[in-house]
Image 1 (cartoon, rainbow, N blue to C red):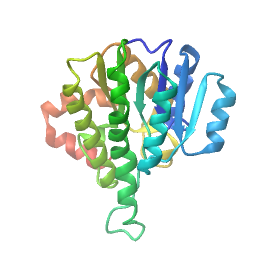
Image 2 (cartoon, one colour):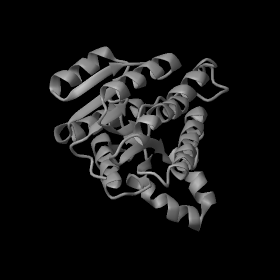
Image 3 (cartoon, one colour):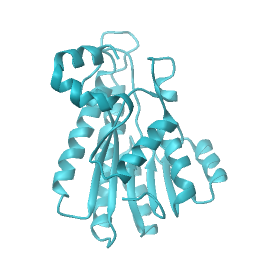
Image 4 (cartoon, rainbow, N blue to C red):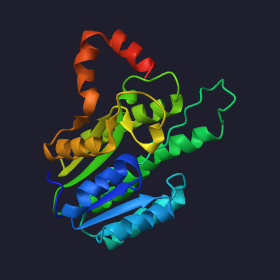
Length: 245
């Protein structure tokens, strides 16, 4: 599928990878719809790109997600691509004083439940299209091998990857493609001050788009391209490396 001359929905499009996806896709597509919470940053995107439409919506709130996606599929009959990109990451470990019990539900909802909500809410629209459609779910190598901290984040990314693959099986006899973008550590505001050897958000966005256009189901980005091979050679080594990521 070529990501050109389409109407595309991107969650979390005001920062990091999402912002770079907008930068890549807005110039070559009809309409790019961005869902995010920061109204100021949404306004900046609208000012920069004449074909960007914005929705302020908290993915942690089911009713807001239902109303927003309902409005989008009603207004934009030519919507053919949904990019579930938004995500948050809490870094404290459970035994540390900075850990917040209340953060568990928010992190699970934003990173996993909302992606499933959106996929379900857009499905009827996609099934009624005559043109091919696609979901692109942005997950992580941490969904394959977790690290020591951010346990909830790792769990949500594992959940999103498995949901994506199962959802793909369900739709394999339709014209709807379901892609998983499996990311390494990316240089974004979320990862500021953490880790080394990060790939740029611009590079990550470019590789995601390239993978979709090449028809890859699972798109391994950057260093994660090594994960399938290293996992076969020594899953124990792979787990040890990722533990300290």
